[in-house]
Amino acid sequence: MAPIAKALSDKDKADVSAYYAGLPSGIPAASSAPQTPKPDDAGAWLVLRGRLSDGIPACASCHATNGAGVGNTFPAIAKLGAVYMQQQIDAWKNNSRGPGPLGLMQTIARKLSNNDVQAVADYYARQQPGKN
Image (cartoon, rainbow, N blue to C red; front, side, top):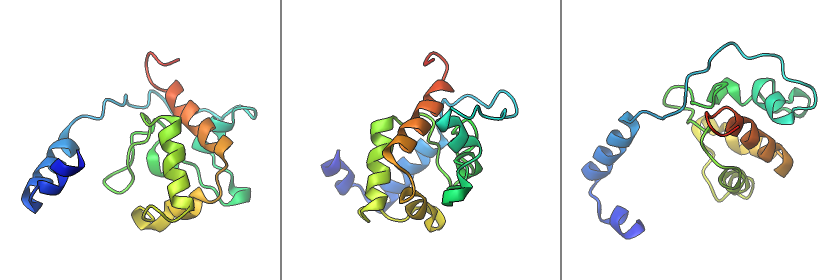
């Protein structure tokens, strides 16, 4: 894919981006107001409440409770697998990925453990129909 992408003109890149941005995400709407997470559900707790004692805001505050993202600034993360999520968190931790919108994720990533990332990925996977 890289050779094809490199050959695209700026207009082609904008057109392809606009096309994909206009497609439906396939992430179902949140069915109801989020409930208080169970204390032993680390993923639900991080998504819905965060861990403020460590300076980690709720994932839902930027990515929505169903992981559909918020506006153009905060992307959907509901359908991302745990391995991919971990790779991106690690890239932020070692400065091999840009800081993201408003420079927030790089700071947050440094506070997340591998178990945190797995728990968040597991939570969002449970929200997808047919993946329970």
